[in-house]
Image 1 (cartoon, rainbow, N blue to C red):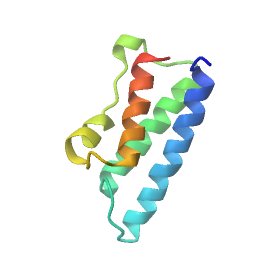
Image 2 (image 1 turned 90 degrees about the vertical axis):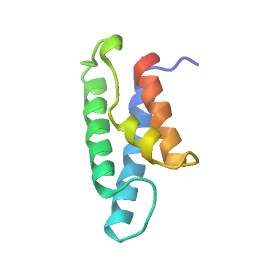
Image 3 (image 1 turned 180 degrees about the vertical axis):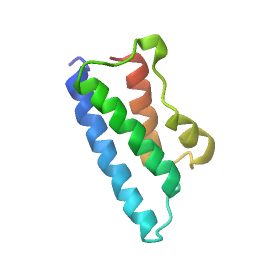
Image 4 (image 1 turned 60 degrees about the vertical axis):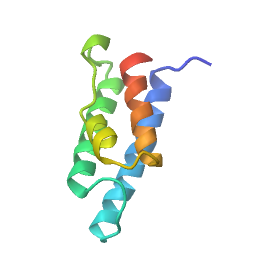
Length: 97
């Protein structure tokens, strides 16, 4: 099966939900990967990318990048499940669509 824009939109929606759960955990004082500000930034960027995908206004492939990847790669634990999902999503955004 080929990876298409609908797959991407579905996947990004799932990851946004996971980021929202982490945001709630931080509000409750529960520790995890990413602080509240990072997670808010990540959510905002994911929503923006999803909106572009839904409206068929994605940037040209050579101009696509995710700023949130720096947080994940530079500051999060390498074993983070959410971090791996975010990096995988960033890779698909850059190379598979």
